[in-house]
Length: 143
Image 1 (cartoon, rainbow, N blue to C red):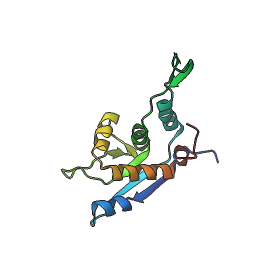
Image 2 (image 1 turned 180 degrees about the horizontal axis):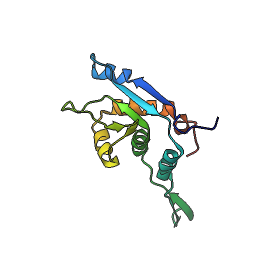
Image 3 (image 1 turned 120 degrees about the horizontal axis):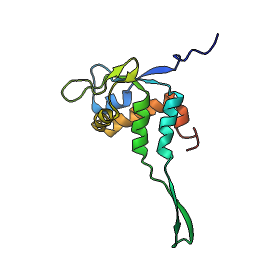
Image 4 (image 1 turned 90 degrees about the vertical axis):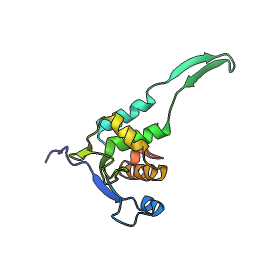
């Protein structure tokens, strides 16, 4: 039987640490993360594609300059692979919208919603993304 492309791994998690720290004792906070596709890997690699080489008279040779922001990478990895989430905004509406196991928000909308999260929750969500996409974590692909 040939490969069928809709078989990407998808795993559900409970954000136990976040619930404990925030003091959530009602319905557990849940997310679902899917395995990244080749196109999503390529999109992530764009973060590393811009660098500049220039002569630096102080060191007497060329230097390479690359701007990188780990938090932007975390946000993008979550944007690319988050498949479901029951976190609500302060007004009780869902923070992230989904359709067919994918984010159904413009990236700028997602970025704004992501920015509302406490760091502990954002970090735990990202840890779950890395659990499903281990190549993106330490010891994974060479950056």
